[in-house]
Length: 505
Image (tube, rainbow, N blue to C red; front, side, top):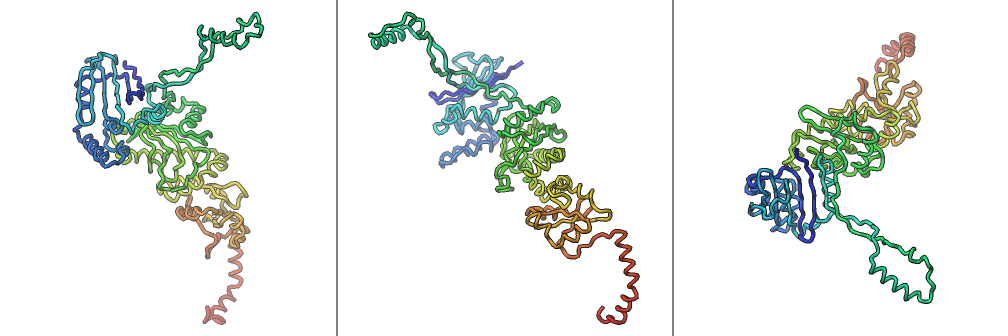
């Protein structure tokens, strides 16, 4: 059984970065086969492109991830790459390359690894920042925080320790005291009070574990405590507030993945700035616990750009560029399932919390969803809330409105205005309220567009009461009264049509 450990060690004096693992290592044959492939398609293209850009004085950092040749991207920051490896079936060998050619030799140091591999990068001068401890730590935390095996960084810290006072120091101190205090009488117990130790600050070097946070999405949801979700969210999102809600699930089928999604307590700053063009970096994609990217424009639809979470799949490839991964057909399947699960999560929020917290923060997002997401429009319509004439402050869902409709009412009435007060004071409202009809108030700029995208709800069409020709359904009593009046005045109306006003009617 192989116990895998990864470690990083920076050597600024020699301008080197050492990355070591305790894996199975590679034989000489495997070093040649796996690493001696500079002429392969993709790798060759990558190196040629890198050379051209360097000659033109352009930055090569944007090349990372474009060619699917991860190992060779090391030459973006290193002039030389040295790989020392020890396999149980072979002696220790060294593979070395400057990107133009490579060599493999027996390691003259002998067996220093026991088993495993060390990659040494001889850094370019302009890439010296990658030798800084904080840079290394930040990169490890970002991309490998949830890897199953431990990752260590050789780092330093300052500690205050107690050290005995040396005899020479004591003698010097005594002489100094004697010179200063010749005229003073020393107390008998002075020697007893002299300190025997002193506090000294020392720089201590040791291996520091970088990935001590476990990926809770890999555990069954029923085994994860509520406090664990809250703690994970705060660490993962760097948000000090607890989330409104979360959903933890495993999706199976065309693609299998695990995910935890969160609704934050408040809308992120600038939520609608550059709406539709700004990337959504709140969903982090992992492949086999390795962080791949959060640089997505369409992992979630625009209107759900506030959802935070992780997606981890074993079905997506690790050895392709991020650009190719963005276009991978399985991502479309993942997106569809994420949307459905998100809407399920929102639907399950308790009514009071939904109105008081969620709707105040993200109501506009749901309305935009009704406009933009045709396939989920019916689901989203059930999440809508509007102020109505039924209650002064509590918003109402469309389902609640329909439940309160008059017996023969077949339309959902709405009135638009810049505020509730303006909508209520409209002259068109008096007749409806007098007849006991409930009216929805559309007071936000997006509201009318939302209703236009939603022609009906539960078989009831929407009716703008400010438009001409609004007809109300009659009660049986009103209908009887109208028919009685028509019958009573039928002789008069007939005479007027046939005689008096024949030419004008």
